[in-house]
Length: 252
Image 1 (cartoon, rainbow, N blue to C red):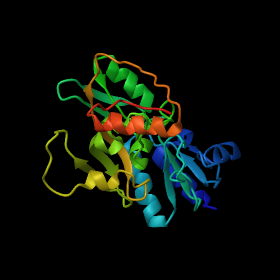
Image 2 (cartoon, rainbow, N blue to C red; image 1 turned 180 degrees about the vertical axis):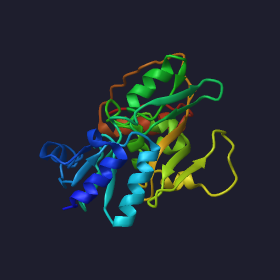
Image 3 (cartoon, helix red, strand yellow; image 1 turned 45 degrees about the vertical axis):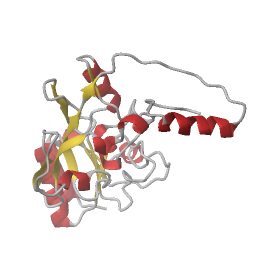
Image 4 (spheres, helix red, strand yellow; image 1 turned 45 degrees about the horizontal axis):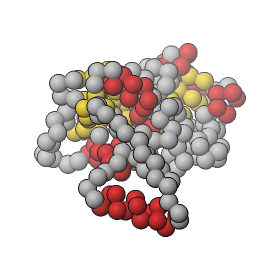
């Protein structure tokens, strides 16, 4: 277990109201959708990027394991504190849509924003954020980026990585970096943002995400096809895609 000195150090960073080590919190943040359980020793709710930086710097110096967590809806174990240590959670404070830029068609969000909440907000102004994982009603965008989440609309629009334009993140030593740009054409330098996407929190902790948006489709149509065999139904999918018509989603 971590010492009382460590606990006091975390209190000095995030405040007493944002650190928990009671059994209820440790159990609540011990599992993801796999139902595998590993209890952390502390659950921390950073208030901003500076808190994240100070936490990572301290944990790096003291060799304390740290696990970033969105909503715990993933099936890969990415948010499981397998080595104990500190669980870093974003839903309490770092959960804001910072900007919806209609001219450049981008959104800037914090990692704790719920996927569906962003979809609803951008659609109010005639824009569209396509990635729609099955957990979209409760999964966070930070988690979506860390896991490179897809969804039913992926066949037409792609997955999360196709919409991430830039990231702010904190490295294990506490250094804050920015990767990527707000512009569509960004060909200079290394694709650091691309490396961080799908890294499941193993390389850095994401603190801000710049996402590409699209114009909201003006019309939607739903069609149902009935087939005598499964084989014919699958052939219809192939022929539809090969015809140049790309449905938003197809479900069997």
